[in-house]
Image 1 (cartoon, helix red, strand yellow):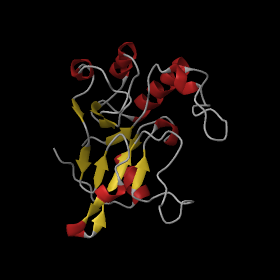
Image 2 (cartoon, rainbow, N blue to C red):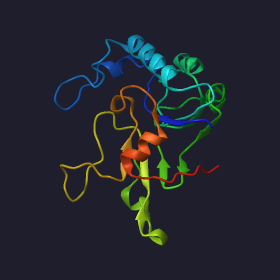
Image 3 (cartoon, helix red, strand yellow):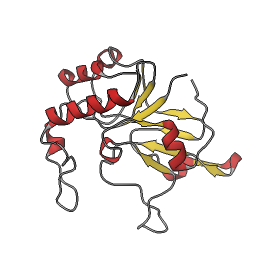
Image 4 (tube, rainbow, N blue to C red):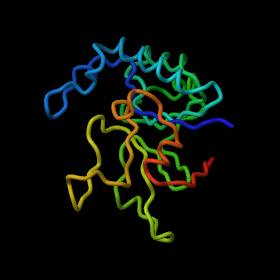
Length: 187
């Protein structure tokens, strides 16, 4: 049985990602000097974590330019891209490295997207419960609770590389952190 992993916003080859600042003035990607160092660290961490037969959902913004998309070819696992706002290449370019390309994906009580889904779209009236949205896009921020803006909203979980130590995170770990125990994959 293969494992399932998630990651988002690798931005392979995107030099400016290493210059962007948080609200407090620190660099968003302060762990690395530049894109070359960051890309190599992500490749190394990915391949130590993900085996050849594992499945990885990449929740958007994989590479900023076509030349850097080839980095995906160095990564273990069967990869599915959930397109992000910076994934603007032709589908044929992504098809070289990804088993499938999607706008979003659903895993039982989880909705996978690049940008966080609007909270009203997460309500499941028939089950009187909420979906959990696994997303990327918010590199250093979090979706906050509308009733108490000092707390994160429990319906959201970010897999931006900055939030998960630049390493794909297993679906099992996300289940533990979100409290969603039953996850069945849809096609």
